[in-house]
Image 1 (cartoon, one colour):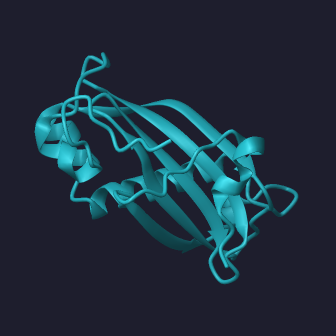
Image 2 (cartoon, helix red, strand yellow; image 1 turned 90 degrees about the horizontal axis):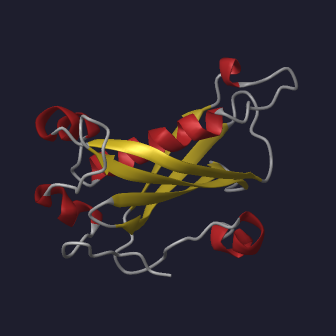
Length: 164
């Protein structure tokens, strides 16, 4: 059975949201040789790239494309914070799964929580969290346009599916 990243909360300081409005997705891919370091394990910064891949696919599955938000609405999703807790290393040619969930959503920010796992055994490799602020083209904070709010579970202006 898949370990629950929330069990690691006291150590990692990360919070998961497992409520009824949980929006989640999972992507799978193989570790490329270029992603490993001299020790033969995945270089730590690559996990953040994998989290971005999971985040983009989750948004796409919710009917939101970054490109459209940026080009059509002038809304950018700026990273305000990133956290990562490593449990075990991934190695070249491992098949990895990244599970991504919207753990908090307001008209001003989104928080995504991630679990990076070995795809076949479901061993937890890493848990992470990124906080994003909606910004205009001038990079000043702004509110998410109304047309995207339902996709992220934002029920009212300033509303949230935040959970705990």
